[in-house]
Amino acid sequence: MTSRYLAELISVGTELLRGEVTDTNAVYLASELPLLGIELQAMSTAADDREQLCQLLRQAMERSDLVIAGGGLGPTEDDLTRDCIASVLNEEMTVDPDLEQQLRAMFSRTGREMPAHNIKQAFIIPSAISLPNPRGTAPGWWVEKDNKTIVALPGPPRELKPMWKNEVIPRLRLRFPGEEILSRTIKTFVIAEARVSELVQPFFQSDNPTLGIYSHPDGIHIRMVARGDNARQLLDTTEAQLEEILAPHVWGKDNDTLEGIICGWLSRRGLTLATMEDGTGGLLANIIADTRESSNCYRGGLVVCSNETKAAWGVPPEVIEQHGTISAEVAAAMAVAVRERFSADFGLGTTPVASTDNPEGKQPGLAFIGVADANGTQTWQQNYPPTWEGVRNRAAISALFRLRERMIELKLNTS
Image (cartoon, rainbow, N blue to C red; front, side, top):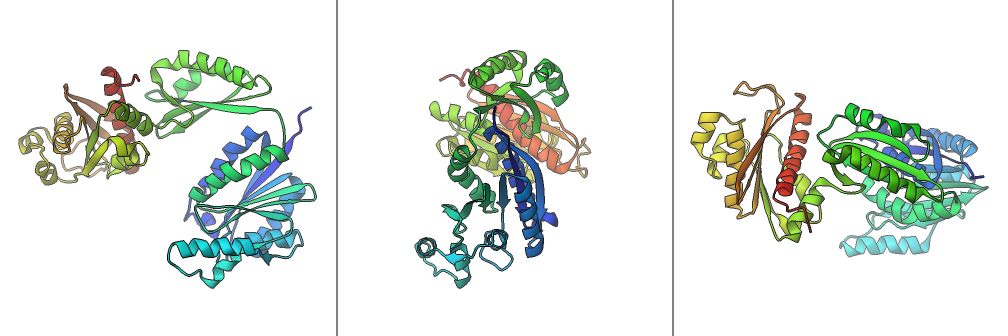
């Protein structure tokens, strides 16, 4: 019989309770634990308050096999996670000479002397081992005592996620062995969540694999989770069936990103891309530049927030005057202009109505996307719910999907 392991998650930080910071770590860890055969039974958030945090830790240890604390490992007085773990376990913290040396070396490499209060991050208790943090100054803790496990992770996601993947998951697999659990995600676009749910409804009858449907900025994701000795075979079979049903809308799987796929296709063929965007505030350029492959294919982008700027970069003023800023013709002209100015193989232009005070009186949420290449131009009209941030985000992502569509049409998606 497979053992049942229970976990609790405590997010630490007054800034979380005040709404100053969104707790993305909790969402991330909650999605990771089921894949390890560990059931998350409670989540809580603690202020930077010693009494409250210690109480939550005691309660969690009474109920669960594993307690994960995220945050509170900094060097300041209100970083209390180490202190509370030591207090709850009735152990004394001391400075680990190796950790101190590593911290001082880290500061030395950046030409700085370590502030005195950072020595706090070299503290440890007898029941703990430190978890290296190559992206920050706060080591994590792995604690085992009285058949309980406590994991303390740094708060910044860019530090927490690598530590979780590289240091915590391997230890959890050994500490809480169970049946094999695998997951796979199919990513779709240009199909409503309700329609996806309707199409895959028969698969919800299965308890292995299980299905979940999630809405993301880049479309609707279907996550499959299978367990047991034949987990991989179950996933292969279910994935093939789902792909057959959703085929026209599937664009990626698992860790695929839209920008990564596009840049991969461009890079393999030695092709390049440039962008000109109005109404998306640089989001399109940021999304593309955020992928590693972008250095091989992305020539650069322009954020043009006025007609004068568009004209200065090559958009004919008469096109703007005749058709209006928010138009298919201007989106096409932007794509052509930026392609020429940056000597790129593809030009991509966006011009949505992102606010209600559009001087041309056009409907908020209306957007036009233009793609230019050696064969000419194509344009698309999109309509989104009229929220400023939603229009900006969706227009930027839709522009990439339209570019993907054009590349497939040109058969540039094959290796």
